[in-house]
Image (cartoon, rainbow over all chains, first blue to last red; front, side, top):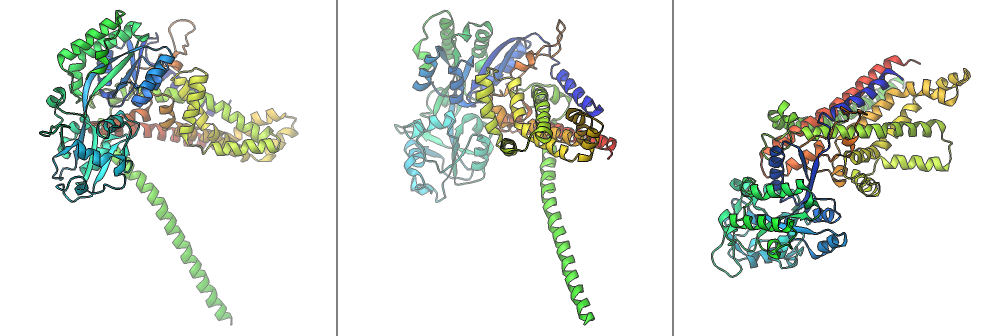
Length: 321
Length: 307
């Protein structure tokens, strides 16, 4: 062997050594994946949980979207899945086919905010107007603001929105257009919400929708629109109070974690979920989402314990926001 | 008459010199465009990232607080993956290269294999990721682990190593082989003692360029299930009890520098962008370090070879 090859082998060995300066006993592991919207909350909980446990329990959190998360969950690869919408019928069937039972636990509220450029004079919008903008029929047809409402300024309408894989896209199309995934497609779509923020911030004629956290983080360079409720009345802004009181309709939604039934028999998974529900009120607000009402968290905690004890899940827990 | 001809040549020569200068200027311009772009990107990254860079950043786990977040799990993950990649791809790639160049008969099959290897080097990396997802994760049941990630990237750089090995072997003059045969060496002896040592600088360069490419890959890692939040290190490969070597780290969940970086760029908080820049800086340093190692090894080995 030439010295160089020996040197190469040595460096490989060295890197092997460096790769593991951690203690060697293998540990309890909680696997979580799913929605990028729920990710910041779960990340915060996982961080605190591992600190509290002095890193004796491992938690991994991935981001493969609500749909991707459910696919893995229903194959039994995950203990918990982050979801920004309830599970669909197809996904339920997939889970049932592989014998996986689960419990849905609402952990926070999010509001899809509709924003425009800071110099745009418009300050509120109705659901009907949003539908006129985003419906598939508007594709390549509705290109200027006055086409939506004659009182709107004469500006070109430039649209930004989340990519079609995101739960936000599904939720928005369902709430506004009436059918999930029905949307015009001639808009700038990106999975990276920062790109949407940057796009809207620099263009007075632009309009975008995305999760509340991105608006709260960039409030100084965006203008948020009040949403006139479907039955009419005063426009409602996506403030924490409005969202929590259920006044911001129909764009407020629940964020969930789904817990795998078999996994919940493992103490580390149980403890993690209990910790999640106990710390949620404070951590959810810290990552700029809207916590549920305290009484609601108590209900969810109770439902989880009931389920662990072998009881049937109360249907209301999964369904109600 | 001859004065005419002299004048004609002078004009012709001057025109060619002008063309010469013009080409040099255009060439330099193209070069500067590339170099300047790189410099601007690098400086911007350094300016954004340097304030965050430090020993704490390298030794901290990811966190929701941008100021406390670090890349420990990410760079250790990247290093562990690289170790698997190198252990898998180097012996296989070099052996395949030696076989194709020194042993394989020239026939239709070899030609098809050669064309395939060259084409594989140009296949988008996400394709490797999806192939590996089906093959390693589901068919072989290796899970979303360091081992899967390392093997995936090994597949990705295998063609690069094979092609580089073959190029390097071709630079060894046939007289070397013939001299070895003349002294009674078998093919394998000639290759082991003369051809491969002579080609070693080129082979090493190929290996390290391959590894430097692998360390920056994101798409295949995401496809095979790299997780974003990992606040622990894989188990140590050396254990205090018999047999002292533990392979648990191969099956550990992982994250890697590019994945961590990507996650930070899409966060709502502006401060995470500085973290992403700092992580990019660490990644660039690792890549530059590997390339530097390649240059140094080549230099040292070249000095030893004389023919």
